[in-house]
Length: 219
Image 1 (tube, rainbow, N blue to C red):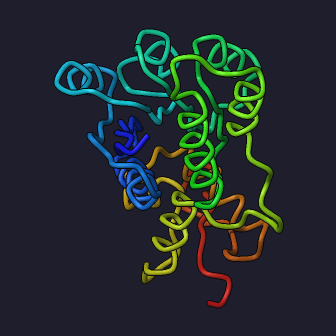
Image 2: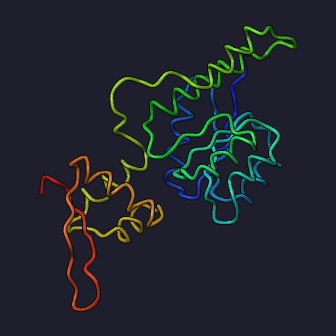
Image 3: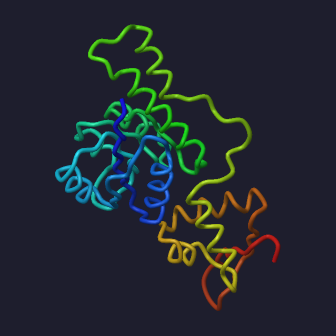
């Protein structure tokens, strides 16, 4: 199999979508054909060109990524923060070949793409052996890389936003600065506080409940 594998990236956060596209573009044997942020845009891209693999988020503004995977006629992997067991089962039943939970590091996605390329090579012949099938299935689940997975595209965005700000930021302000949802920003901020990269304190206003604000731990 000498031809490059064409990837469709579907994620509601456009900056995260572009980061995932960058990882895919850097993977040997892959080329990104389109980067979209909605189900409708994904359908338009699919109608316009051929893809081998889709990298799809579950939560999209106009529908479910799981339903998109169910309807397409090529391979897909889920890249999502959704961890509900029902969602995971639905995605796998829909045909997703992998389910990566955000935050994941760049190496995790690169390893999955390398495994997918091997999967395609092993199943490229018209007729394959039982050993080929076993090896192809194993290739889709590469062994975890040693050491903690501390970096991820979204986490990098959130951390950089807080570090570059002149004053402490709330989750809503981080959301506005990065383009990710407030819930996603809050989740990564909590992770960064837990690892010591950021610190959190309460911001008291004249009325209402205090708001959490975040700043670099070195400040």
